[in-house]
Image 1: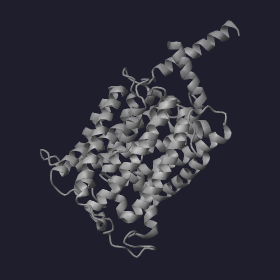
Image 2: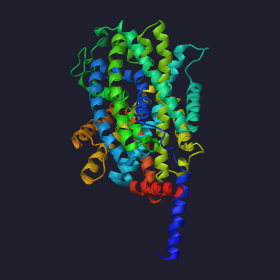
Image 3: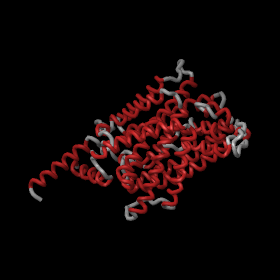
Image 4: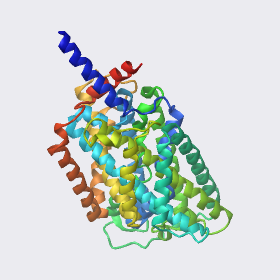
Amino acid sequence: MSTTERGRVADATAATTDYLDKRRLATGTAGWVLLAGLGVSYVISGDYSGWNFGLAQGGFGGLAIAAVIIAAMYLAMVLGMAEMSSALPAAGGGYTFARRALGPWGGMATGTAVLIEYAIAPAAIATFIGSYVESLHLFGITDGWWVYLAAYALFIGIHLAGVGEALKVMFVITAIALLGLVIFAIAALGDFSWANLTDIAPTDAAGASSFLPHGYLGIWSAIPFAIWFFLAVEGVPLAAEEAKDPARNVPRGIIAAMCALMFTCALVLFLVSGAGGAEAMQDSGNPLVEALGSGAAHTVVNYIGLAGLIASFFSIIYAYSRQLFALSRAGYLPKSLSVTNSRKAPTLALIVPGVIGFGLSLTGEGAMLLNMAVFGAALSYVLMMISHIVLRVREPQLARPYRTPGGIVTTSFALVVAVLAVIATFLVDITAATGCLIVFAVIMGYFGFYSRKRLVFATADEEFQAIADAEEGLS
């Protein structure tokens, strides 16, 4: 190599190092326990509100059957993601896996679907926070836009202070939220009645009964709300670059989180419906509180329920920022979105989706926003499970510190259920789901016509190698 060529290589390496240095996350801040807490935190609000709208779609029986199917899907999916995150530990999570397996188009499609999920989910949670705040009757506080604004401003601000501080705060809030579920369970047992589970009057739908008041189709329509019990647990791998020993700790963290969430799902579904009655709970903004009626436990669970909603709101803000950061750093979206501040937090990646989410929260339509978030989630699950299957077939030699039990059979099951879940979002609200599909198409159009020709890193391998070279240069 000539002196001129060596100079050009050195200049290119220096430019790449400088580019990545402005887009560097804090590393080594989370072990598997903190990652498991992050996984539970993403989801815990789903136990406190939102899932109960599924009672209006399928009754207790329909929602219970949907929940069993969806829990099985999530467990299968989590086992597949545990394998991929051990082999490809990066901040992009599912987007990184899809980019390796399906190329730039597949990576962009998966990342876009995840962004739709994570940008909209906090907006839905904000409306539930408003309902819990209003029910507390503190200083005349009522549900309104300023409650949503305060939530976004406060928790985005904490994230801007740095991931170490953010994850520790999240862990404490999540522990409080889990304590709230224990208090609720103890209090609700005294009011539990099996008759309350089936108090929705049967319709004339095919297969309708007291157990399935909306018939067989009600099971399918309840699927998006069953997903709310687990939605966003797949976000644990987004913390891979900020974890200690990610190849070992990310799989342990995501599997532990999923096991905890299956237990809380069963607990809440039975006790809320059995104590408060399925009919009364099907349109409640704060079902755990209303199921308890009144008394000390009612007030305590109301306060702690607010903590549970905040835990998920807080942690999904973290998730959307890391997904947007990863897409931007590789050049799939505008590069300015991945620049980090002095505390190694991606500033615009935190703020921009927050502004969009706040705007959506002003609709006050929690059930609609939930369905929109589920559309993005289910679509991303389809692509991620395809990615696992493709990587198993195409790259059997890829180092996998953790391997999915059952291999592609496990993830194929998750793939089939995820496809049914995407369709279910159209059954629940065709307008909302179609709107998300249009947004997805617009972002993919931006990629196809513009950013596809301006990628910084076309493949995951290029990005990983550049990061490794940059870290070696800095050290």
